[in-house]
Length: 295
Length: 295
Image (tube, rainbow over the protein chains, first blue to last red):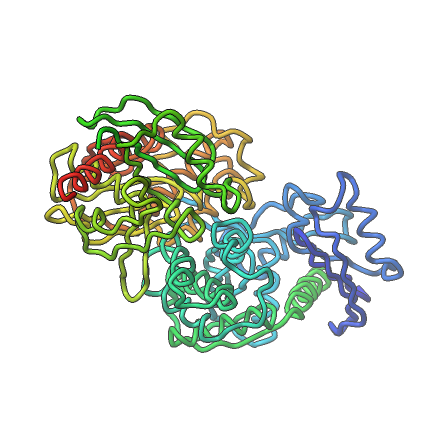
């Protein structure tokens, strides 16, 4: 293998990077063509357009994310927890043998109920390598936040919280949307902290969300501060429910989100370490290396 | 007072009844003209249209519900808890002195955060009279469910849970809406019970809601059963968060909702007693009687 085409193909976004033999990123590309935007049978064309000029006789393309789901290019069956980096590297779904493959997502079970992730497992393994860790709790905030527990280099279990999605639902479609300003504006730190604090003290977002309405009604919180308060409520709810038994976590996400998680986690006495989007490329590159070694 | 025109004017619905001196309902009317459907300044006309032929020299009209909110006909300031029937009867907001009045809603405070209701207080006082109770926990399921604690005939406190609204948000606008069938269909009792059970075991709907997706993904629950499962999840979440310390409650709501609450409450070892929509009319009639006695 001379070059790796690393692709992170999610529900609503598509990112790609060209990496050399040393794992250095030579070029990056992005497109809004998430899997929901791809017509049936349209994956090969979208792939070729994205990778134009990158493919050669000895290039390898590895993809992670929802591209491996039932709604994606080809289903890559979930790899059950606990599982290590080598397990997912061995279970690639080959779209074009030896040339184009999809990395499987992972599944786990808690109290008889399944949980799933696709793409986050590559980010986590990449982050562990970049940070030189084999034990960690990794938090990936977002539409569906993931809390991933790693022991001895293996993903032991994980949990999904629909935090970002609940924020969007309440923000855009609930009774609160009538009171909230049209734009989120800058983060109001005090209002955010108050939301986190409230969520940690209450038993359910079903009740605490209503406080965004009543605090506004009684003029205890200005409308402009409500989006920050609501953000604090949902993130605080995630922390209360997850109840992390650790003093430090790795947080992977956009700067806007990691800032909020840093504050909320600090409120719970938990220190944070960050790692950015390059973790995905490093995770895919490490999988590609495994293939080279075993070939 | 010869006759009472009793009106329940909510956000999206409007109901009225004509009651005789003995409190018997002579006629009922309903209209979709909730306060959101009334143009600014349009309340008097909507009122007159609704009550056509009912008004006379010695009729009294009493209204409860969101008609007394800032977005309603005239703001009727909240009556703070604890408060009894007499307290709200003394604080009517008179639209037309001696002839047309709005019953105030109630407010309470928990951990420094306000909570509010409008209309439910009349239903509760009406129910207490019909059932001959002075101590009770009254549950009013709905878009914003209320749990009302009554001691010695006074409403001591209450709590709001956005249960119905969260169901609708998840049903219509979340990722789950892609998996759920277009229509709710008949209640699937087993799936509903499973949802209640799951919610009682987990710390937050942020996580349990995702199980509706994964159980479907792993074919452990058919799509047709998902609306019932989701309904169980949100109602179970309400019960878990409310954590009622009582062996019996009064449930007031539509038959479809009370059926679900009965099952979920029975699961928690709580017996239920029902009272229907006539409680509103009896509550308003009792307030009208108070006025007659003191006039």
